[in-house]
Length: 367
Image (cartoon, rainbow, N blue to C red):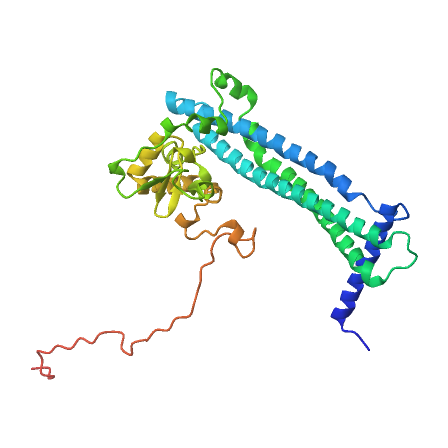
């Protein structure tokens, strides 16, 4: 009886998995499996190395953010013009983009670590089951061992997938570097070091810690009208609130011309039109709450100066012609919504030119 193409492919796939499982089991028993790399061991060395590389680059990027932010704050306070203010702001935005990508890559490595740990547990479990089933027997029913060999092959395929993923992550990290080179070349250490003298560099964590006490919270007041501030003890799943502008302070973006500072949710999260805003301080929160629409409009204008903010801060609702990168039909090809066209019918008048009949005449002439 002839088999269909699909059945043949299924049988070949199962046969390949059985052979792979047998070779892996023989390798574990020291009786074969030559040429098979020890993927679990390789991954256990590669994952910590990848994690360290990303964390080192993340720390370096955050140092640049601290430097540029400190210089911008000094310029705002002392009305300085060196280095060029817009250049500094663009450098901060560039570093924040780089930081966001690195955090995604680091999270992928963490997920890969958990997946590898799970695969290792499954591998040990299946190998023990096979050893208990086979032991020193000369013959074992195929229905007892073949399913376990197939399971062994699938687990090994999982290790191969994680190897590919780590390779992709490393390539992405390397390909991001050229996009960060511009601000390093323009704002060199020889230029920055004299300007940084006497300045205190603060990390995002240190800035948030400064306003995390009870004295840094927004106090409810009548002039907030229908606005509501949310706090951890009064809001369920407070940590999972979808913060607007990816958690950056909207007041700083609007007032300090695109300055990206992390908001502190413990100050109080403003709920306005089903959006949630956090701020660097209670003073910023109060001023923003006094006229949210005005500040939101300012942020939209700021994004027109630096269009990369639309993606970074997820401002797609304010720019209706832009689609979020991850939601586009073909990521990487087009992020602008296409203009839709359709046929339309119209009735054409028989006599488009209006007639001009003088009602005062009687139809005769020459009189």
